[in-house]
Length: 340
Image 1 (spheres, rainbow, N blue to C red):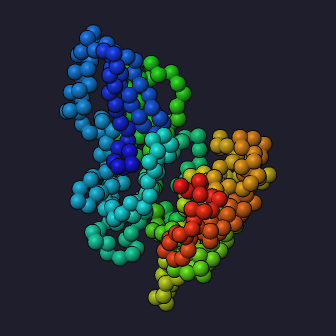
Image 2: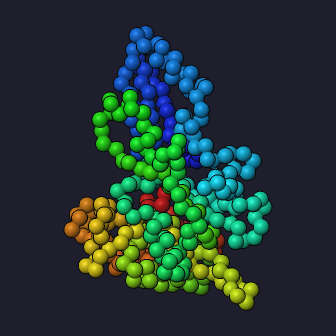
Image 3: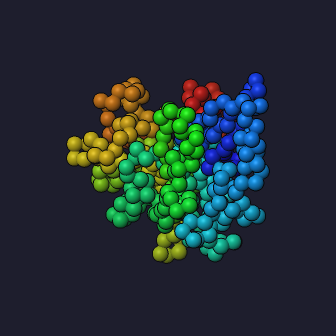
């Protein structure tokens, strides 16, 4: 899946003791058919092999909206975006499987304003409020240092919303009676295109960007929105053009997949079924780590602020200079197992 970012699911044919079984892996996990006898059901095997050889690529798990040519293209709402580079990708099979690319509408880009970010992910439907909805509310209130939504859509497959439930064969479902995630395929086109905060040219830039993120988080919390995943992967920086023609570096807080709306009592608003605690292990507040699966401990804004402290400690402990240069003695640190 990591080597083929346009792959939605994959089939696997297994043989054992004169029998065969068909496996399917997608973003909700793996499933399989019953065993078939190789000698009693040879026609079914022939159908499988013919499908693998001659079926449309979309039937075999390839996303047709992703065109892999000399300049790979992603089409969203009839707009063609040329991929410049891959920003990040997830190598896991089950989960959000987020892929992020830097893209442009023309090759080469006409200017810096023609460079966007596409985020492609499989979102668990337990989250009633999508990242796009969160960001659109922040954009409406003109919150700085967060991405602006250019486009947001749910990928369509044969006129229906693309999801793991849509892709799974009925023959498998009648046999495979285990519960699985219902994940929907969504895409976001965002601006500006940032880079990791560790790419800063100086300690002053790091502190400036972190201050931007803390201020943005405070304003977001003022709207009763809680981020819940402050980490090194979600702290970015970008260059903002000023009216006088100069450029300044700003912080950029990204990835609102785990963000939630809360009510006046700091409890999750109705419609959210996620656990109260979320985050990336090395940056989670101590109280949340000690609580584990204890749902009585709620994720609060104070926990996010504590994560900012650990973020600063992470940068100063593991990096030895500008442009993401690792310390040569970083392997001696106690947190080695967290990033190895």
